[in-house]
Length: 186
Image 1 (cartoon, rainbow, N blue to C red):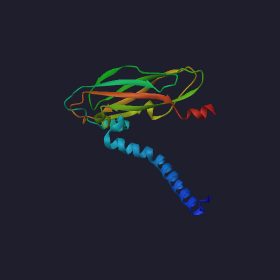
Image 2 (image 1 turned 60 degrees about the vertical axis):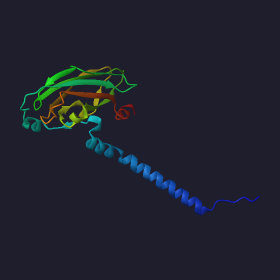
Image 3 (image 1 turned 120 degrees about the vertical axis):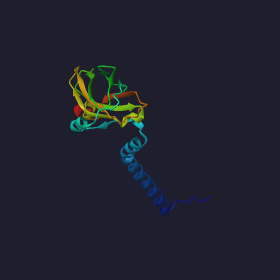
Image 4 (image 1 turned 120 degrees about the horizontal axis):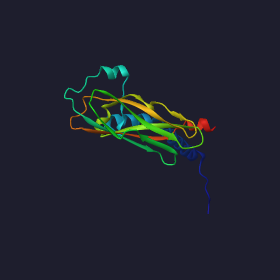
């Protein structure tokens, strides 16, 4: 019985392919966020909202037919966190083109300083591109002292171009510990 040893040339080919796969996986992982954003913009998935400056919101025309749209506010927290998080009102009737304000309340339920972040989602998906925020607590990470809580502002406007068949829009936020929490813990 003879034993043969693989040639170094075959090892080199396998190593080259493994390195190529590793580089491709890294590149794909790096491109995931921009690709995800592009796919969400094209398909309307994830219900991402728009963002306007106050001046842009003031310049918008009010819905000519003066229709009312019900905006529902929903809140959730990610599993394993000690946050209290809720809207201060569950819904409001709004007229597209007018600016409105609402608040969400968040409280740190731990005995240490924590950083929180909120991510929004709007449904139905067709309404997401018509829901614009001029001010939102979700634009920045929020630092909370131990066991402290506060109301956090949200100012929004619904574009008058919202499809006429949409009479109810749900704005949902998920509050979670921010990755910046590591800087506080370190």
